Image 1 (cartoon, rainbow over the protein chains, first blue to last red):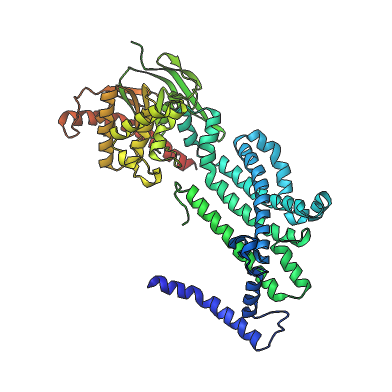
Image 2 (cartoon, each protein chain N blue to C red; image 1 turned 180 degrees about the horizontal axis):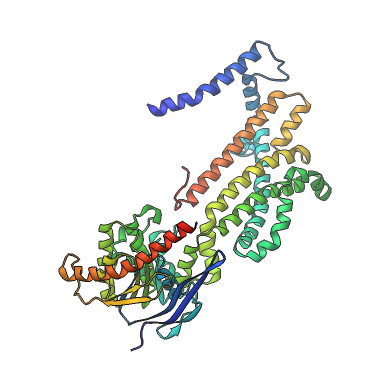
Length: 271
Length: 264
């Protein structure tokens, strides 16, 4: 009963907002070119989602056909870019962060240049990325990995530096050598921080992919909404934005579940 | 017979905010094989510092520590440490925590499993083997910590106020458990506490320490037969005597603290 009330309450404001939006559009108060009605957006979203051709069993399975529409293709393209760029960025940041956290000498060597580069938004690298890598996927991967790099790096450093000395003492006392200490104590103890960094890093990577797709490539969600603007398809722009939002939500949900599982030993985990 | 532990002229100086604090000075002590010795004193008497020195976590400024005749230079599995804060690895289950030291030693899986099984039974932890430390009570956690050091079978156990954070009933329970294990496995135990009754309940000898710098004030042998009854007249006579010794040092500690307050 209380649950039902809570759900009802959480739906009130969105329902009013959508109804008001629909009402304003139906009343003709705004040009549908600038702000299409939500119903129109929804219709466009399904058209965007739907396969372009009717189902033909001779040409392959049902699932590939179902995903042959423009939207699944764009979403998949964008998510693959996020995954690839994130893998590169986090793959570089994680070992560097672990070493910087564990070895003060390495930290002192690397920290100044990283602090200099860190405040530059990845977006500001776009011109250079195009000069270096041309158009297409390479500059996109470069920018996305850059976006994921720093959150993972900074959190990993903080996590390793913050490892409670008592775990190190206990492990040394039980006969752990330095390498084992690093692998079996420091890394797991820093894991809550590392995973927070990864979650933030994926979020930034997703922001960067949309921007990168507006500039250098010709597929993906970011490209699609910019393309739609050229044809004045504002309903498709909004449909694309909704898709971007859903993908972002999906990524965060997935990361949250992964964190929850990996950190099931951890005290203050958010449910 | 060679003493399990020989401490000679140990001095330990800490640099703290521009001033130097002498935590230990001219500390001498021999602990025999299989003996249970309690280090007793007010906070700040350097008893934990001494234990950390014996464990090899921080070397003395001068003086020597010999464990079974060998100089202590680093932490080692011959001196198993039990911390007040348990120091269990929170990312490992009870079972994996207990197995940690054996894995460090590279023992075969089957042997590890046997040893862990036996220890979990011995400490009544069998039903908790797949739990994580966060899901255990303080008393249970300390049982796991004890099982974890017993797994590597060290000849000596170093215990730093291990039961200090537990409630009175759990504490007595674990004290009895410790005495049972000690009698069965004939370990040498150096046990740090500020509990007078605890030290008299457990120890063969109680080493009363002076407050800053920490030295041996008096060594009180406890010859009462075990299990000891804290309500008996003999126990209480001893308790009165030791309390007086400790309180002298506690007063020096209090004066020092108030001096800091006044100066501050």
